[in-house]
Amino acid sequence: MATLDLPVLRDILRECAGEDDAADLGGDILDVPFSDLGYDSLALLETASVIQRRFGARLADDAVTQAQTPRALLDLTNRAIAGDG
Image (cartoon, rainbow, N blue to C red):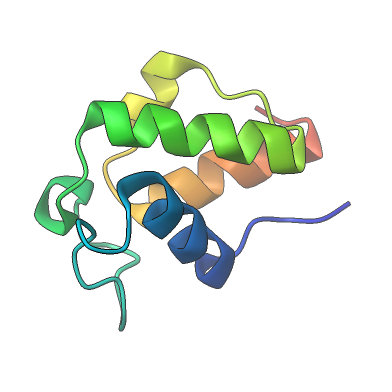
């Protein structure tokens, strides 16, 4: 079963926010808060929707909005993909 990795998450984040609106997602962003990257809860919910369509991972809205960093969202998603979350 596929897992979500940072390069794919970056692509999804850019897709959901639009390339022009997205903050610099290059470099080590794993522990940078989404708020510092320019993503609000609505952008994260859209991101979760795309993740669900692509990976079949059902993510609860409250869990998504509580994931404060890309690392937290990756962990949440990959647990859901594995059936542990």
